[in-house]
Length: 594
DNA sequence: GAGTTTGAAACT
DNA sequence: CAGTTTCAAACTC
Image 1 (spheres, protein in one colour):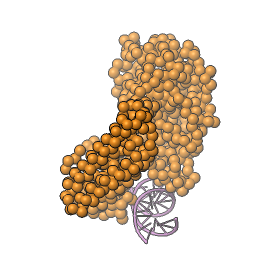
Image 2: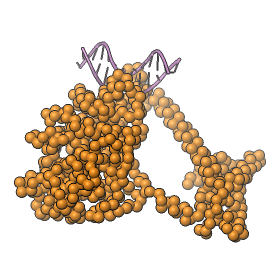
Image 3: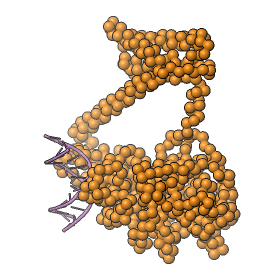
Image 4: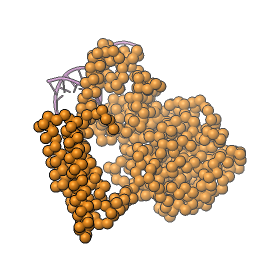
């Protein structure tokens, strides 16, 4: 791909070996190969994304209500919005909030699945504001409900018929699945690529966990038991066993999936969101869903969505996405019963949407450094995990409270931090609109001895230069600083070296192992392909010997590198022709295609 | 790996 | 708000 690039002899031979392996692969019987491909489950190329986790009470399968049983159990939370464009405000679940910006005119609602629901997985609830349309919910059999995107948009009772016709297909879905007429449920907005929902069984837990998984590529299968499901591409739910040591796997969802239901962004990071129901519930933001960040899930970690006045004491707790991946199996009960924070004192935390100027997805996609806290119990900002809104996981900390076992303490600590500094959990490194060059430390550093050229300095650590707001002394971390340039060059060179060495090592080992593992002769019959068994270990070694011989000859005769490369490649071509020739001859001669 | 240095966070 | 203490990471040996 790069004609101007000079290839060393070693690389040349390496390429030849690679070609040899490739040839060998392609000699494998076509049917054999294709069968392996078809057996392979579809794998998403997208990073894991959490869309939502619904926890219901443990249920036996019989306990699922029939579609006709419109239970008064309200488990899906309805968030509404009064106007399409609103300033930062207090959100009251149950208020009218527009979640479909185009044509629902503020009367649609987003049902947010609760942490727990009594005995059933309730997909939709209506917080009716009309006495003629009492609050209702549709309780679905789990295997049916699982096929639905949990975020739903409903028409409120006061929505006009004209507005009600915004999404006929999805409304039909609701009607069919839930057995409830369109007058009650206007719209369920499915994901553009519907999710695969998996049940997660947690031993010892009373709760039933569900996760939504959508593969962005690959085939999909019809949903089991989902005859009423109008979307055939929804995958069947699969039970997943979990133990305490296993992280809850992260569902995958296409990035565009949530776009349809993204309500207007909540402007303030310190909003109070109130609910109108009783038990505390969880809203788990999807770190990898930037589209959903502006809505409820963009609320900062630790936020408790306080109940609305006069409507009980249930609230939501917004947790950072890593929470989901680190969550221990037994923690939900503690959380759901948590009532540490009343409506009068809702905890408001700031979203740590980015770390050091990186987006959340970027930041969370890389492995986090384990902390080593010994005295802070990981409940102070000294602890990087805590400061980043994450639970400690695989850390080396002592007496750690930054976990679900100490959730109440943790929430208190969050509150204390925010009392001291309302933006304590906001990213310190702001990303400028024009790219990284505009990134800068929000507070500036205060370095005195390091010259801002060591990682003690938060600016230098974030690979940004100090700015006018820094109060550092003897700063050398500025654009024209020769010391800084030298350091940067050294760091870059070191990084490149490490990468090259790692890549070379990986490539070589994979080539060797690849060749060695494919040298077992085997009889492949039929398929019209040459038997790949001719590329045996001996043949590969002999080929390599031939190539090396050419390389040595070229060196001995002081040939220019281009000539040497040509000789090697020509020799490789000869080797291949011989292999193919013998293979074809053997196939003709041998009655059993050996 | 132990000890030191450093600067942010926490505290007064 | 300034000064001091605490803390954990970065760094050095």
